[in-house]
Length: 118
Image (cartoon, rainbow, N blue to C red; front, side, top):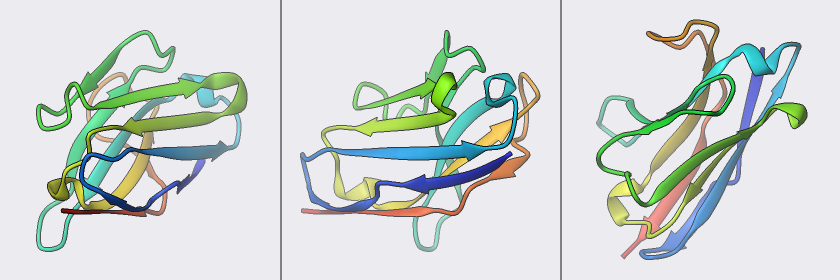
Protein backbone atom coordinates (compact mmCIF):
# COMPACT_ATOMS: atom_id res chain seq x y z
CA UNK A 1 0.00 0.00 0.00
CA UNK A 2 1.15 3.54 -0.73
CA UNK A 3 0.05 6.39 1.49
CA UNK A 4 -0.17 10.13 0.92
CA UNK A 5 -1.01 12.51 3.73
CA UNK A 6 -2.43 15.98 3.20
CA UNK A 7 -4.31 18.72 4.98
CA UNK A 8 -1.60 20.26 7.08
CA UNK A 9 -1.26 23.99 7.47
CA UNK A 10 -0.97 26.87 9.88
CA UNK A 11 -3.63 27.59 12.46
CA UNK A 12 -3.96 29.57 15.65
CA UNK A 13 -4.26 27.89 19.01
CA UNK A 14 -7.81 26.70 19.58
CA UNK A 15 -8.39 26.14 15.90
CA UNK A 16 -9.06 22.98 13.95
CA UNK A 17 -7.57 21.06 11.05
CA UNK A 18 -8.50 17.85 9.31
CA UNK A 19 -5.75 15.65 7.96
CA UNK A 20 -6.38 13.11 5.22
CA UNK A 21 -4.41 10.09 4.10
CA UNK A 22 -5.13 8.60 0.70
CA UNK A 23 -4.15 4.99 0.11
CA UNK A 24 -3.45 3.29 -3.16
CA UNK A 25 -3.27 -0.41 -3.80
CA UNK A 26 -5.55 -3.21 -2.88
CA UNK A 27 -7.09 -4.37 0.36
CA UNK A 28 -7.01 -1.09 2.28
CA UNK A 29 -9.70 -2.53 4.52
CA UNK A 30 -7.26 -5.17 5.78
CA UNK A 31 -4.84 -2.63 7.21
CA UNK A 32 -4.71 -1.27 10.73
CA UNK A 33 -4.01 2.42 10.36
CA UNK A 34 -2.42 5.07 12.50
CA UNK A 35 -1.26 8.66 12.76
CA UNK A 36 2.11 9.65 14.17
CA UNK A 37 3.86 12.97 14.56
CA UNK A 38 7.36 14.28 14.94
CA UNK A 39 8.38 17.67 16.30
CA UNK A 40 11.82 19.22 15.74
CA UNK A 41 14.36 17.62 18.03
CA UNK A 42 11.93 14.97 19.25
CA UNK A 43 11.31 11.36 18.41
CA UNK A 44 8.31 10.34 16.37
CA UNK A 45 5.34 9.61 18.60
CA UNK A 46 2.07 7.78 18.26
CA UNK A 47 -1.02 9.98 17.99
CA UNK A 48 -4.00 7.78 17.13
CA UNK A 49 -4.84 4.36 15.72
CA UNK A 50 -7.82 2.57 14.23
CA UNK A 51 -8.51 -1.08 13.53
CA UNK A 52 -8.99 -2.38 9.99
CA UNK A 53 -12.76 -2.37 10.32
CA UNK A 54 -12.85 0.97 12.07
CA UNK A 55 -14.71 -0.40 15.08
CA UNK A 56 -11.99 0.46 17.56
CA UNK A 57 -9.88 3.57 17.98
CA UNK A 58 -7.15 4.52 20.41
CA UNK A 59 -5.31 7.73 21.23
CA UNK A 60 -2.29 9.13 22.93
CA UNK A 61 -3.21 10.78 26.21
CA UNK A 62 -2.01 14.12 24.90
CA UNK A 63 -4.68 14.25 22.19
CA UNK A 64 -7.53 12.30 23.77
CA UNK A 65 -10.76 14.27 23.65
CA UNK A 66 -9.40 16.69 21.03
CA UNK A 67 -8.50 14.48 18.05
CA UNK A 68 -10.65 11.93 16.24
CA UNK A 69 -9.36 9.27 13.88
CA UNK A 70 -11.69 7.76 11.29
CA UNK A 71 -11.54 5.87 8.02
CA UNK A 72 -13.59 5.23 4.90
CA UNK A 73 -12.60 1.83 3.56
CA UNK A 74 -14.67 2.21 0.40
CA UNK A 75 -12.69 5.35 -0.46
CA UNK A 76 -9.36 4.06 0.85
CA UNK A 77 -9.08 7.07 3.10
CA UNK A 78 -7.94 7.79 6.64
CA UNK A 79 -8.67 11.00 8.52
CA UNK A 80 -7.57 12.83 11.63
CA UNK A 81 -9.87 15.58 12.87
CA UNK A 82 -7.89 17.85 15.17
CA UNK A 83 -9.76 20.30 17.38
CA UNK A 84 -8.67 22.66 20.14
CA UNK A 85 -5.18 22.69 18.72
CA UNK A 86 -2.29 23.73 20.94
CA UNK A 87 1.17 25.04 20.04
CA UNK A 88 2.61 21.74 21.29
CA UNK A 89 0.69 19.96 18.53
CA UNK A 90 3.04 21.55 16.02
CA UNK A 91 4.73 18.71 14.15
CA UNK A 92 4.99 16.81 10.92
CA UNK A 93 2.17 14.29 10.89
CA UNK A 94 2.49 10.89 9.22
CA UNK A 95 -0.04 8.21 8.38
CA UNK A 96 0.97 4.58 8.63
CA UNK A 97 -0.42 1.14 7.87
CA UNK A 98 0.08 -2.39 9.11
CA UNK A 99 -1.35 -5.77 8.19
CA UNK A 100 -0.74 -6.99 11.73
CA UNK A 101 -3.27 -6.51 14.50
CA UNK A 102 -0.62 -5.09 16.80
CA UNK A 103 2.98 -3.98 16.82
CA UNK A 104 4.99 -1.89 14.44
CA UNK A 105 3.63 -0.25 11.31
CA UNK A 106 5.08 -1.37 8.00
CA UNK A 107 4.09 1.35 5.55
CA UNK A 108 4.46 5.09 5.92
CA UNK A 109 3.30 8.11 3.99
CA UNK A 110 5.20 11.32 3.58
CA UNK A 111 4.46 13.84 6.29
CA UNK A 112 2.25 16.88 6.32
CA UNK A 113 3.25 19.85 8.46
CA UNK A 114 0.92 21.27 11.09
CA UNK A 115 1.91 24.56 12.70
CA UNK A 116 -0.08 25.93 15.63
CA UNK A 117 0.69 29.46 16.74
CA UNK A 118 -0.16 30.93 20.11
